[in-house]
Length: 102
Image 1: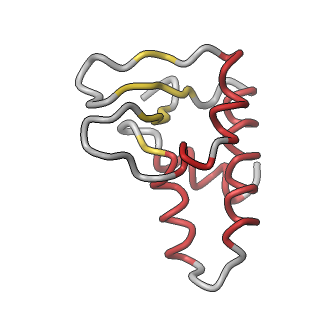
Image 2 (image 1 turned 90 degrees about the vertical axis):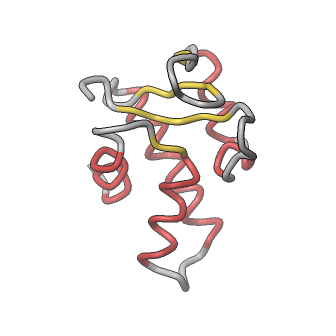
């Protein structure tokens, strides 16, 4: 497991976490990092965690019970979208992750 995977799992064990929150967390640790390289590394890690069953991705707008598990067939495309890694407008649909045993 790489450092990104460990950080993602640590943050996603208690509550839904937006993909943008992982990006912000890693940027805060290393503000001078290569932003594109960071994003690509996080995308790879999220894909691997989902593929291995250690992470699930949900789509929703408020995450107060209306959220839905994203089908595996849609995940690669959604994870690769830059907009999936940007903070959403209030009430707009977006992705969040959670570990299966949270």
